[in-house]
Image (cartoon, rainbow, N blue to C red; front, side):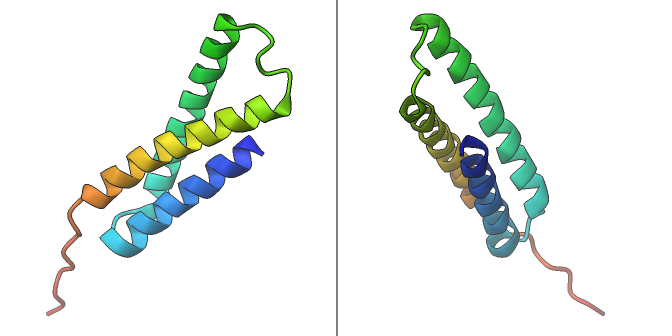
Length: 92
């Protein structure tokens, strides 16, 4: 479920970058997926060391996934939204 949430958010960011900004959507999707996976692993291990056994229930894992996808997804969405649109070259 965590991977599906990360994948859906990265596809949405890539789609936004491709359709609204004229950027390479696959590149932004890959970048966002890598950032989400890295943040998830970091948060998982930090929280596991702080309180062992916190992820024994699935609800806590889903909460971590939503927190990760929401935070990183919103930040990368804002980065893509702040990019200028690519100017298309006129054909001669």
